[in-house]
Each structure stands twice: as C-alpha cells, then as structure tokens.
Length: 265
Picture 1 (cartoon, rainbow, N blue to C red):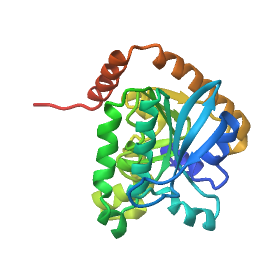
Picture 2 (cartoon, helix red, strand yellow):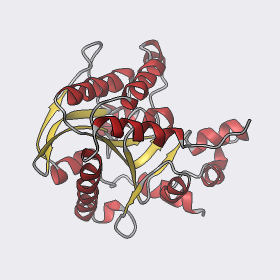
Picture 3 (tube, one colour):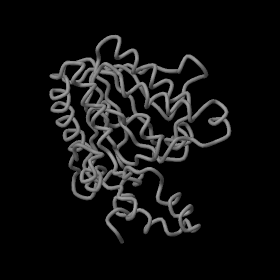
Picture 4 (cartoon, rainbow, N blue to C red):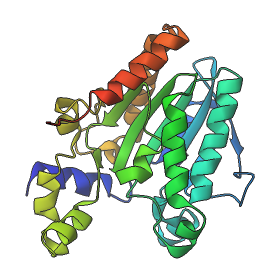
C-alpha cells in the first residue's frame, strides 16, 4: 500500500475529529450564523464568530458526519452554492469588523448535483476565490482531512495554508482521476500516489506552508492533543500575519499563489 492511500484511509476514519469537535477545544464563545441571504442554509458549511486566545475571529469550516444521519444533514461534507455564499457573507463581515478569518477545510469536493448546478455552483466557488484573494483581513486555512478540488479551494485562498499531517489536498479525488485517465475507478490507490496529494508532497510543491503534526496513527487516536497542535499553530500564524500592514499582506497573498505551478512557453 502506498503512503498516499494510507493517508486517505486515516482521514476517512469515521472517528476522526471534525470541526464540531475542534470548535469547543480551541475557541471560546462560538456563535453560529446561518444562511446566505439568497437561498437558504447549507448544513455542509458551518460558520460564525468565536474568540481565539482573546481575539475575536470569524470561523468557517466544512462539516463531516460520523454516521449516516449526520452525513445526510451535512450532505457528506459536499457544500452547495448557498454554503459557499454563506461563507463569503461571513468573510465580508469579518473584513468590515477587522476580524481574522480561520477556515477549516474537509470535503471530498463540492456537490455536483443538478440543484447545485442550477443555483450556480461554479460561480459561487469562483466568486469565493476571487473575493478571498483581495479580502482585507488575515485568512488562515487548515486542511483537516480531505481537500477535494475547487470545493476545497473556495475556502483555501489564504495567507497561510496548513495541513494536518495525514491530510490530503488535490485537484480531483483519486477515484475521479482513475476514472478519467484509465476509465477504471478501481485503480484509485495507484492514482492517489500519482496525484502528489499528501502534506509532504504539497510542502515540496509550495502549495502548503505548514504541516501540523498528528498523534501516532491519526488525530482520532488523541483528539485532545490534536486540538492543542492546531491551537499552537493558529496562535503562531495569526501573530505572523497580523503583524503585516494590509497592503503587504495582500501582496504576499497574491505572490503566494502566483508561485504555484510550473509552465513553459
């Protein structure tokens, strides 16, 4: 078994901590806010205001369930357009009140159903990417488990991108990759290795900035310790980013994404 697939199996463990576990561990006085003011509320995206180490922050993240009923309520962590628009509404509010934005990413990808497409899924994701690139407040994103395609990127345009040690982040799922490239979804384990989707791969490629360590065997083996590791990283990241003038912060964010990828002419 290759290392990438081992990571996938760890992050898909049903007992792996989710945003619902981390909020009370890391933040105080969380107040959840609902709805996109256009269509409705999306259970796959949770957002609101919280206090981190004495500082008010805006918190946004994808929700994963541990059983079939929880997963039905959060659509198996696959956001709809109203989820992304809710996130954008909260980001703009954070900018207005000068609150840092903290995003927790954990999704196999955005919902690709007919209803989501009819309500403008592609536009909603593109709008988030566009707006985040110029949002005049610090943005930190953490990949907790799976970071799938544009559905993840819509909350991952940021000043610093961290990944939990076993997290995976890629342009497509391994099964989708195998189905397109080889017309054989059963080769997903082979595809996972080729996608270079592990935290180590993404640090080497310059996509991710930091790796947050996990307890031996994965975060589910010691959720309390994992919460401490995440809190330590967030404290350091916000100190680094908040010390920058706004124009320098936006310039660094732009350059961060311009450096990603190789091309030739």
